[in-house]
View (cartoon, rainbow, N blue to C red):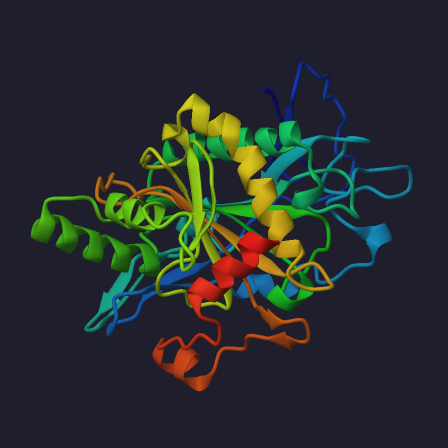
Length: 360
């Protein structure tokens, strides 16, 4: 992997990742003012959950036409967020971030009775998987998918080294049904100044499991799933030498798959060479199965769960992939029980979903 670090016109960082030495000297010629984002993190007094308030994001770019895409390479008469005329993988600071270190200069920590507020510091980055506007992650070659993995890993290492960062979250939203506002194939990375609510809950369960059994919860779940491989009611979708993909026992979404490295790792930086080498084949296989579920490619969210800082050895790296579509012409909208109470109800039996994905 070859890495080139440069800046955009307003001072935001831009990083090119290439599979070999490449000259990246294009300059951002846009007349941009320096970026200054302000956000707050407020704590829900009843749940302890952190909620980010980022009012400036109301003005962010929304569904631009393809010929005005800000993630495509720049060309004469059309300058974008990527000054180069072409690129392999590019990462840059979001122009409309939910979290930014500039918040610290404008928001003072505050508390009053049951309420607490802190600056929304951190970092939000955009990861462009390819310069091809019409492509998707599933269209990448295995070497290019490996380059994306290397970029995620590099960013994870650098962001965790920043003061105040508690959790690094790499993810992709694909499809208008998910709420994607830019059609170009891309993902994002958030560097949170707090442990996210879902991770905090998982940590509580993992700590309790360790105390009760003396074993790691993630190891036990993976072992239980792999032990059923080949059986009619198995939830395993595919099993490689170094990765296993399975539908979770209590899946929330009609088609949801979790991808675990067979050797537990805390985060992307801790994956061994064998797991890195096998990941592109396994992940692209999984995405192709999702795209065969329905006549049209499935809208999905792909979310990397990484151990927060300070390191919690009870947790483990894994990827969660799910689609909001439950049939070819029906979406899984959150019902009142789910949005209002967090009590999910799934219309598809997890074992049935796994069998469907295996047969594809």
